[in-house]
Length: 155
Image (cartoon, rainbow, N blue to C red; front, side, top):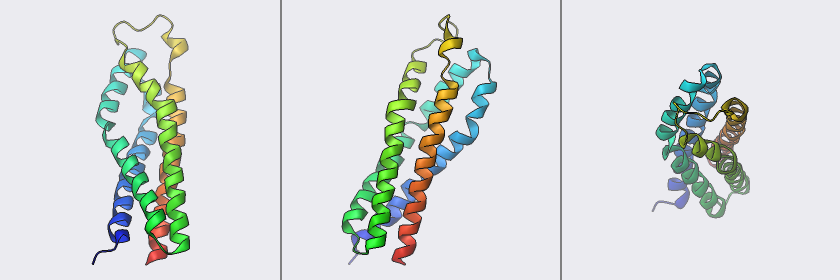
C-alpha cells in the first residue's frame, strides 16, 4: 500500500522545484527590464506575465498544499518541521506575490504602451517589482531547500 508521504513528497519537490525555478528565471531576467525603453517595457512585462500565469500560482499553491499535508502526515519530527517550514516559506512567497507583484502586474496590464500616463517616469514600477520578485524568489528557493532536507531526512 502506498503511504501518503510517497505521493506528497514527490509532489512537493516537483511543484517546489518548478516554482523556485520559475522565480529564479524571473529574478535573473528581471534586470533586463531596467534596460528597456519605457515604451517597450510595458508590452514585454505584459507578455512575460501572461506566460508565467497560471503556471506560477499553480506551482506555488501545489507545493504549499503538499507541504501542509506532509506536516500532518509525516511521523518523523525533523521532516515534519521541515515540511512546515517549507509551507511557511511558500505562504510568505504567495503573500509577497499577492500584495506586491500582482498589483503591479494588474496596473501594468491596464496601460496602453502607446499612451502611457504622463507621469509614468515617476510611477515606473520596475525597481519595486524587481525588489519584491527577489524576495519571493528567495522564499521559494528556501522552501525548496527545506523540502529537499525533509526528503533527505526520510531516506
